[in-house]
Image 1 (cartoon, protein in one colour):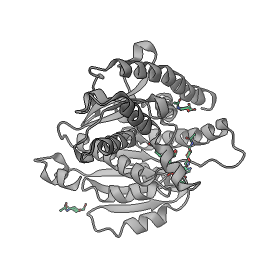
Image 2 (cartoon, rainbow, N blue to C red):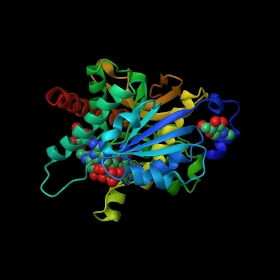
Image 3 (spheres, helix red, strand yellow):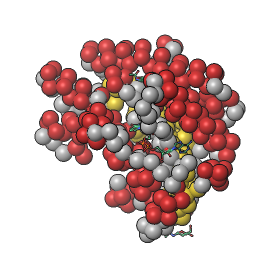
Image 4 (cartoon, helix red, strand yellow):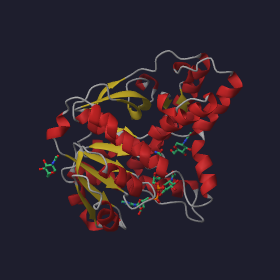
Amino acid sequence: MLSKVATRQFSKSASTAYKVAVLGAGGGIGQPLSLLMKLNPKVTDLALYDIKGAPGVGADVSHVPTNSTVKGYNPDAIDQALKGSDVVIIPAGVPRKPGMTRDDLFNTNASIVRDLAKAAAEHCPKAAILIISNPVNSTVPIVAEVFKNAGVYDPKKLFGVTTLDVLRASRFISEVEGTNPVDEKVTVVGGHSGITIVPLISQTKHKNMAKDKRDALIHRIQFGGDEVVKAKDGAGSATLSMAQAGARMAGSVLNGLAGEHDVIEPTFVDSPLFKSEGVEFFSSKVTLGPQGVAKIHDLGELADYEEEMVKTAKETLIKNIQKGQDFVKQNP
Ligand SMILES: NC(=O)c1ccc[n+]([C@@H]2O[C@H](COP(=O)([O-])OP(=O)(O)OC[C@H]3O[C@@H](n4cnc5c(N)ncnc54)[C@H](O)[C@@H]3O)[C@@H](O)[C@H]2O)c1
Ligand SMILES: *[C@@H]1O[C@H](CO)[C@@H](O)[C@H](O)[C@H]1NC(C)=O
Ligand SMILES: *[C@@H]1O[C@H](CO)[C@@H](O)[C@H](O)[C@H]1NC(C)=O
Ligand SMILES: *[C@@H]1O[C@H](CO)[C@@H](O)[C@H](O)[C@H]1NC(C)=O
């Protein structure tokens, strides 16, 4: 990533300062994500916030000798953490505890994201907001509702981070094809969990892959998170690969803000693609620019089996999005 930045021609970044805030910086994702943001040369001011542990992570990361300031904020200082932020990344959450129902589990992260969104709407309403906290398919609509209620919603500035699905797709397709994952670009559309994740294999150079192999690959991309959960054996889900994915997405958003050209990432956004069918948010390739979303690309040509998968994803997403919107209505 660094070499790519270094070889880019002129960019406004040389003369522009960017403040990035990480909310949930003390967590499994938040800590390595904070480190990776410290390594991004566009970041001049890194604000780390958590309900516990952020000053420690801040002091630790601040010793990395890149030309940016880092500060960890205590729980009572979210206003200072957010003030002036250009990009806010949210990997906050509370893991499942014994006795929690599915609804409890949903409501916990939903409340956290709602409250952090309220703070962002108040203290940095123009920032790009990147949501990592799960379930992304519902937490992104939650943030949108909060920003709408505050009268500051800009659909060009809200992103559900689906980049881990994209990274896994590159990695896993390279494993079955015996190629270098760096050369494998796979567009992933739809949503960000299970069957809503639709990797468009027909648009890769491996479109003629045998059906059995392809089905297994798609399943692995959709449920790759389970491999990590199982291997960690009770100690959580993907954190390091997720941090890399979050840092890549945030880096691309910063590149867009800085006016670089052809910055494209698949991401879950407020999308016109299927709005007439009731799907308000959808992930597809998005060109990033100085205002956030510059262009939402359509899905391009799909194979028949992909059309089917997209149809299923849309049906599921309508319910997930509604669930997020209802949550804010019932728990403003
Ligand atoms: N988008 C993706 O692809 C993807 C992948 C993996 C995990 N996730 C999600 O990312 C989130 C974080 O995962 P993790 O493994 O880092 O969890 P974690 O429990 O290790 O860390 C969460 C952090 O959030 C903090 N937190 C809780 N409430 C907060 C609040 N109100 N304000 C600020 N911080 C708060 C906690 O103190 C903790 O440090 C989860 O929701 C997880 O499901 C998303
Ligand atoms: C390093 O940071 C300082 C303070 O933000 C800034 O004035 C200076 O121009 C930066 N140096 C480089 C080489 O970017
Ligand atoms: C909420 O976040 C925690 C991490 O803090 C994660 O383990 C859990 O799976 C998330 N809940 C949901 C419903 O995704
Ligand atoms: C999406 O989000 C909902 C919460 O609204 C969750 O229960 C569901 O399992 C997620 N994934 C799918 C594929 O629906």
